[in-house]
Length: 218
Image (cartoon, rainbow, N blue to C red; front, side, top):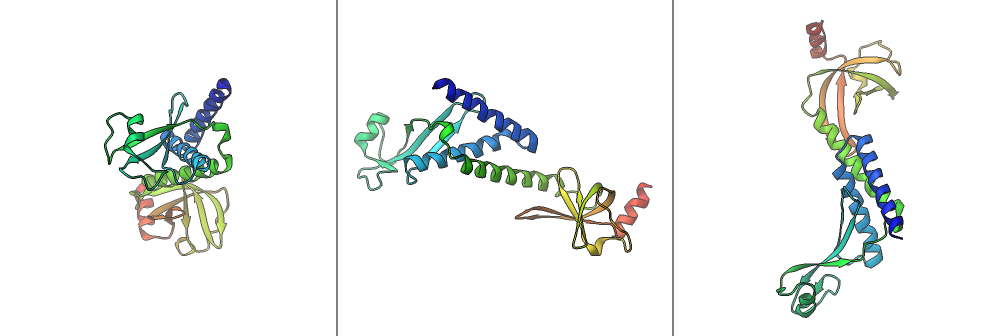
């Protein structure tokens, strides 16, 4: 059984590494997402009322699971509180008001609800990707950038900029110019906005500043 679990852990770390590399984000963000998924799974198993924490060792894949409980004189919430007598067994000398760690048997990683784990991980990865893109482009307004036309939607040109996408709206295009998918295009970064669906990078080929920059580069 132990070898099956450790193989599972090795597999989990391999997934964390590949997602981090592929998405160019910090591995710690992926590990954090996995911990969240494990916590969610453990709450399903031990009761959602528990304050359950999980720690996944990024080097070994070892999993520690515990519940946080507060020491009180009189227990009102059996999920999150314990009395002094019980607390003393966990940590001799514990006082009222202390928060203690009550270790739980580690949930087998194979039993984690794969679907919810994936959702948590992908959401975290998406958020981290959006943050990275915004940080990369937020101070670049006024630059001329080269990209490849990915698609034309309702007259707006979507440009692949490598690690992000920009849009040349209809009113920022050169009149009578016909954009073609797959074509390389140069444009001026007008502004970068942070939005819920990710950073919006607005490009222009018609702005006077773009023409000035192009002439200066030539």
